[in-house]
Length: 422
Image (cartoon, rainbow, N blue to C red; front, side):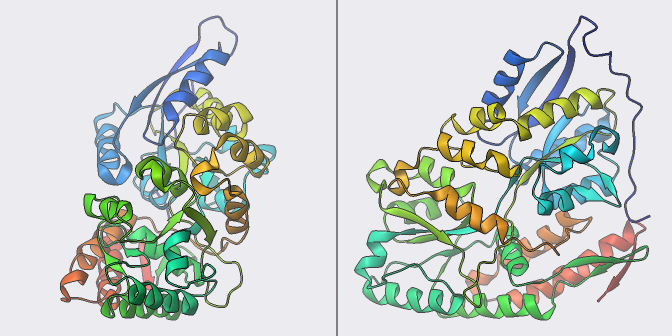
């Protein structure tokens, strides 16, 4: 009753009937082209036709939604965990439970299974977990007298002050006004629960005490000019990293490949990866992004689509093809494939550090009580609009959360869902 979903009768030709089942797939993650090529080379019963689309936030989700409405959506597509409930609630993807047995589910991290299971039904297969970690410049930290990566948020603030004092033009990290998911992951880490259910009603709490603690912390970091406020992956953000004006990045496991592929080669060996600072120093992480494979509502080839998604997410060949392509540092949702990923990823940019060891610790510490809401597009748009005023001092993070709370509740009611603030 919480999520309206569409199913589809599957009329796949039986495997081995001679002719391969052709399925269409849309995605954007690094290494995807290589994954599709490796699958097609090793399978005769299913053939995947791949179309690369913009990342979800850059227009991919709009393209997918329009395709679903027009009835020409691909059979299978990538969707990030936060957006999956939105696609389900609008009936854009189908329940694939009958193709996903207990043995397959058991391969994935429980946090990933939880985020792809809605109302007791399976709506996607998880590709990766995306624990937050802290990437930092060892040389810039050393010049500022920062001997070790901060383990707590208090230590992070102290380090930020030391860095700015030693190098007035440098900052320890960036608050991304255009990317609410980074803030959401930190709220997740702090134990916040923005969404929940009670009976047949959604509960929404974007301004609970745990989130307020995170908001107050970052508001003070911004007010005291200890962090930059710049759009994620923007020209100015990239330039500040290249020039050594930004000494750290609060990113996810996939960010290791992004930095490696973005920054100049002369910075190789200067970067390191550390666990995300936490409030008490204990290992704790939220998940920043992370992708799944979902089957569109009108696909008549769900069985073949799930066969491809299973191969891409649970086989050494699938993960190796993705990471060997160059810049992907995906952390598999299937823990048994982590050694494969670690071996395939060239960590020379990080001085040969065991970056996957840091990712592994972060993945294990991802909180298991977080639930994404069914209208994250609206929630994130509201936050993004309000966060955009932070650099001018015309708004606060707390005000942005209050506005997003109201906008989210209103949207859920407009969709005919029962909802209450908690």
